Length: 301
Image 1 (cartoon, rainbow, N blue to C red):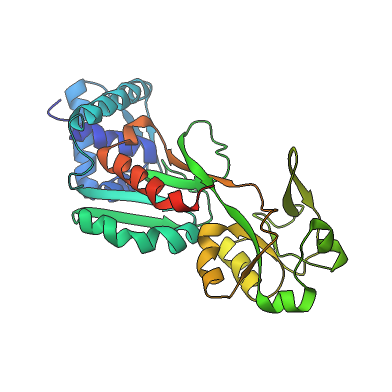
Image 2: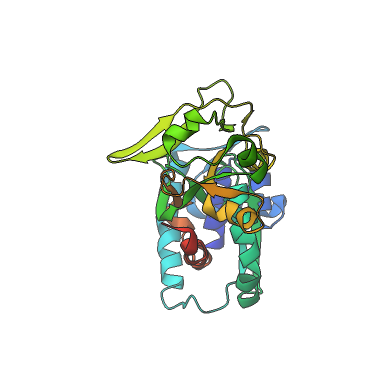
């Protein structure tokens, strides 16, 4: 084996099950990726991949080789970055995904400072409410809010993002400002319902009790399935909303929203930095993880 580049190409093809997608994610031509893998197979004396017109699959030998290759790449990355300081300039492409409102309200406004310190860092930032597939879509890392359901992923909790209750001034002028949970019912309040999937039961209004959190079912005139739409509905005066302090702070400073029931905030939302496997924890990923944690720290409880 001449170098580790062939292993990197092979591993990416195996993960994405496509020479085309793997080549795009690595910034090389498809023909180059195919040639590198063929030379690797010749070098090790085994067929590692089954190729068809539709997909690429690991052979039995390929699965065993892939497992050992991941270990070797991980160790090589650790060795390469053994004496690397995070203060040193970062180079290369980093592909990241995170929730849209987090990117828009906190991360993107803070990026100029990061990219000024690391001008050779090329950042590809995807922002969506959809749960992306790290491996199939070629992401180096993602920032996720809430529980991590996929046990095959490696997640590092960054902190707990503060959540608040809010409403527009027009809405509060119409319904009144609640001071207690009972006021939500007495004053006839309604809420905007956020639902990831339409057809499921609304979660209700979350509030703390002595031994945890409970929910109160409030009526609502609108249901949405995206966080930006949820916030816009609150700004439009369509109901009370519960959202991240980080994403609503600018609206509150401008007087477009007013925090209500500050002593009865919903449960903080866990923010996690997620990678597909330890091989992805390069110097770039480590540095971005640390920077993200520091950037989000003011919004943690």
